[in-house]
Image 1 (cartoon, rainbow, N blue to C red):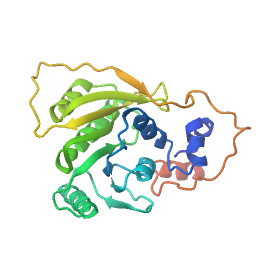
Image 2: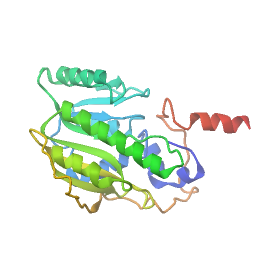
Image 3: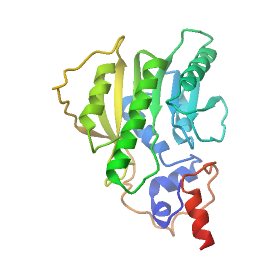
Image 4: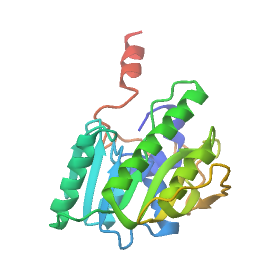
Amino acid sequence: MGTSSKDKRDIYYRLAKENDYRARSAYKIKQIDEHYKILHGNTTVVDLCAAPGGWTQVVAEKCAKVVAVDIQDILTMDDVIFIKEDITSNSCTELVLKSVHFLNNNENAKADLVLCDGASNISGMPDVDVHVQHSILCSALKLAGKISRAGSTFVGKLYRDGDVSTVLKRFLEVYEHVELAKPKCSRSLSIECFVVAMSKRLKPVKICENHVPVFECLSVGNGPDPDVNTDNATLLVRKHKFPPLSPPYKKAVEKRKMN
């Protein structure tokens, strides 16, 4: 998590530190689960683009078999298998399946739930950022098609901009039910929301090219308003217990210190 003055006033940033979560995003998956119950009854979960591990922590609290994947290093945690790999590589698919087979002691086992909260570093060019984000999400969907069972669920970050319909159409081809959800802890100005795709089909179907899916974005979860800053005088600032091992802002911070 970052440490700007804006971050320090954010209630979910503070709650994450106080409750030893690695990122404020832990509350996003908590609030999605509050509404959809995705962590209830799903024993084998694969968390893609997992660094620094906020979602993985929440999942590990409720699910017995967890695999976390990221191209970055992640600080390990008990009872979680970590794989350092690019989710677009063939070797990643093989390693994830081997881990799922090992956890279930079954060579035919597949994941019950696939998650992806991954996002690229912001470039400052909105069109580029949206395109890259959608590419990450579609790569996660492609991998989910190989590693998850029929009837399983997928949750991934989507930016509500650009060619959203094309992205959502790809999900409808793979899953029977697709919804958009925005957790309460997601800031109102943020264009992020989450695709919640349920009941993976036995085989993908082809949707007519002229079909344009329309989705409403549902607000989910309960909690404080993230757009109302906290009073620094009422909350203690403390060093984070789980700082990211390779934060994307690290070079910028070092450069600023040198100036």
